Length: 411
Image 1 (tube, rainbow, N blue to C red):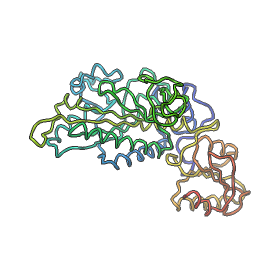
Image 2 (image 1 turned 90 degrees about the vertical axis):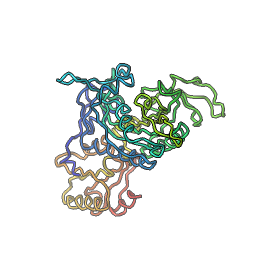
Image 3 (image 1 turned 30 degrees about the horizontal axis):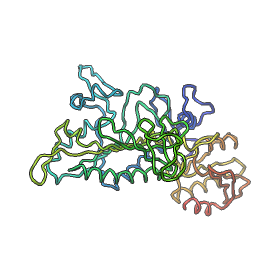
Image 4 (image 1 turned 45 degrees about the vertical axis):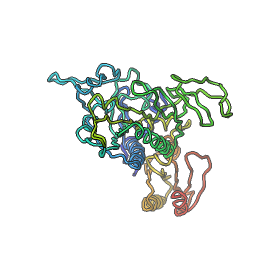
């Protein structure tokens, strides 16, 4: 991709109406554009990152038998009344049509999927089953000042599992814990599995929290990894010694990037989702719910990976693998083009800054702001067939042949 043709360029000044670091950097670097408070448009760079996050999540959901679906965002009011959440769900957007019909604008999808499951689940032979989607959600948040971390419109993965009994549901629940840990590891985040209240669903749930000084949540946890609870239900206190000798417990601010709930039979009962067991008796299906905020993850990654110059993307989610910079010394244009073609042929995704009449300093500043992991420079100083390589997370630079650089980037 040639930067001169890319839609969405960098900006020198922070947006005046943003307070969060992720929103400031993503807007300045040309990844997103703000529509209204809590709602963002994803430009080409931003969509590339969003898709890489979503595809990583998709691969892991598929690995444990998840089947992908896509459910309606405009939802039946009657279904929300059956669960009692038409009035009790505080952040529910309610839409009234010109024909005086009311709908829910989906913040979650139990009210849509469970009635559908009722049509197809008849026998114990139909269970277990796991269904997920990656879809836009809507929540009427009272405060949306944290960029992608708290949106009124956001992209989310939600998976719902259906089981014949609670034992099987809890077994799958434990499987999903491992899957979630793998997802966040692949995305470059250290997410702490944290016990939390289960609300009206169960005695407990689990959140996946990333330590960040700008986070909106708080947890008390053991750095040794044997204890973590949301402060709202925590039985331990900050500074209390770990029972296993790992030192004092810590209270820290965090960003919640995922959560899982053992829903049990709450929604099955609301919609009459039953199946016939081996004895021919009707039983309510048991459910689990597993959510990951896709766009929130993008904001969380930026909050964690940045410096005073801009974003530092982990390799797995970066919009491109390489940011190629051409310094316009006489006779170097063919070298730059040849380098771009070699990288692309090798399967390396390249953003080529081929702009004319832009200083080297401006190009380097844009590289740092955009945050692609590797910067390659073609100039008269490097010589024909060679490039200067600098990793975004490092200070040193080194010069080498294009072929050797391709080998090192392919590792």
